[in-house]
Amino acid sequence: MARYTGAVCKLCRREGKKLFLKGDRCYTGKCSVDRRTYAPGQHGQSRKKNSEYGLQLRAKQQARRFYGIQEGQFHKYFLMAERQVGMTGENLLRLCESRLDNVVYSLGWASSRAQARQLVTHGHFKVNGHKVNIPSYLLKSGDELTIKEKSRESEKFKAVLESNASKPVPEWLELDSQALKAKVLDLPSREQVSAPVEEHFIVEFYSK
Image 1 (cartoon, rainbow, N blue to C red):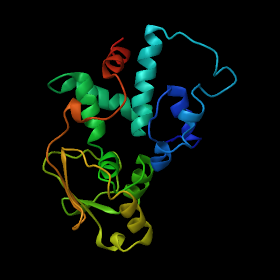
Image 2 (image 1 turned 90 degrees about the vertical axis):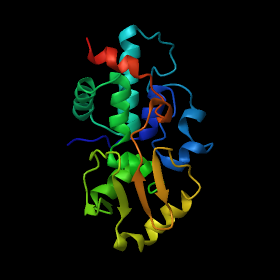
Image 3 (image 1 turned 45 degrees about the vertical axis):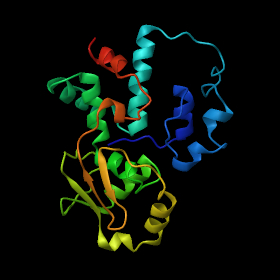
Image 4 (image 1 turned 60 degrees about the vertical axis):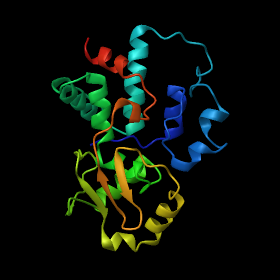
């Protein structure tokens, strides 16, 4: 599957808000969004008025880039969300939040979602006792997540865990930082989702 390999700071600048794609750097004065508050490119500083379609497109792109999901997969999640009971927009964000790579990042076991995706692909985690190396694997309420024994001895892994030790864990997850295991207590409500997007625009975009 194709994936974006360019400068991720440009993505945040294009959306006009922090999408926290570079981990700790996004919280420092080096963040490109703070230093250059305009879109990248030759015409980035020109004023543009977004149309209704433009607002919908930007909301969809912001969500995709925030979670690091390709267009085909994101549209698939939308179709899944439509079939579920409840509000489609909230269902969509709940699906994105329950991805294995996002949960690994939320637990502080990776410094960014991109790093979490790489760690999952390399097989560093187990779900309910079984190794899972698929970043898009959707976790369910009651699932237990652990770091493989061999991976815990890695100096790189230890450094990541130490740097994220004080990171707050979402209420819908339960973390045992000593045993390096976690449990999904429940899937998140909209209030527990930190994604800086207006999901109703995404629903309007795909409902045309």
